[in-house]
Length: 349
Image 1 (tube, rainbow, N blue to C red):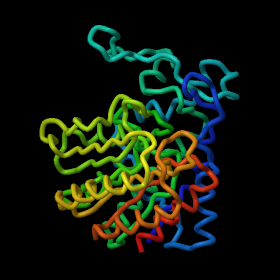
Image 2 (image 1 turned 135 degrees about the vertical axis):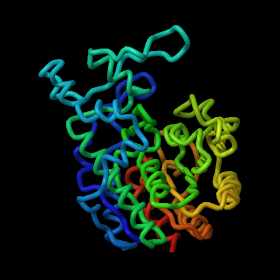
Image 3 (image 1 turned 90 degrees about the vertical axis):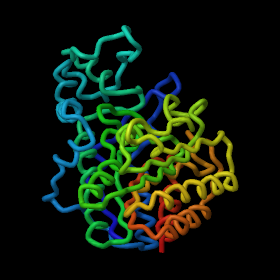
Image 4 (image 1 turned 45 degrees about the vertical axis):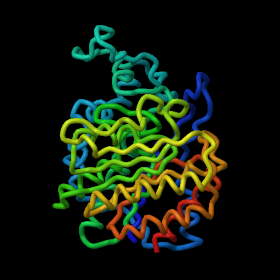
């Protein structure tokens, strides 16, 4: 197994986020990834390396994100500091948003004010942007692209071990701690590498709204997600069971929401439904946005999985017999996230 490590991830280290109406210390911190590396040092699984420097990253990013959004991210920090030099000591958090309801606000005339543009490209105020965010996000996408290329070259499993995470990032927006959708980059790279069908199996506690949106009108990428019920759980406005895809993609999106407090027995039974849907689709490869925030000790989630269960999850994914890319997503019980991640990797075999 090739594990591509984002050596630049710590350049993204938020000071605070808006969580349920108040500013709190960030849950998504560099220590999350370091705990995984430390556990891999104790229990070596695969080969930890960095992505090659000559990847066609710009092309890969443009295939899943809009050009204007990527340009915004590339220049956001400079624009933030230009707004006020004192901003160099602060993270950028959005405070205004263009409501999408008809006749509510116009979005066809991009604003010049940076605060307005930040809101235009974000769907929450819990995703702090700082000087190193773009570099960290780009390097993470390179990990995802490298993992996809490794699978195309014959690896059975490859992982993008990176942060910030990605599955909440949509075609032209950030949110949920995510800027670039690493899972989508990997899935599209697998398709571009000649595989007719690719499945995405998202097992993060929070619905991968960005991944769903990117592939919602396509039949070549099946998206399946097990997550907390959006009626009570973030990101709230997507992830319902009746969202099945649209146009050519009708029937190629499967959401399996579960109530907060669900234990492993219920979650495991739901995983079997998800695995069967993947198997029925008969893909040539699989992408797994690997969220470990289903853990019972996670501070911002609500399922009751225990560390030993992640070994079983890895075994279940391996039984699909598919070349698989994993992307590191949520998991905010920081001390346990390394053990839980490596348990999945050991389960893959």
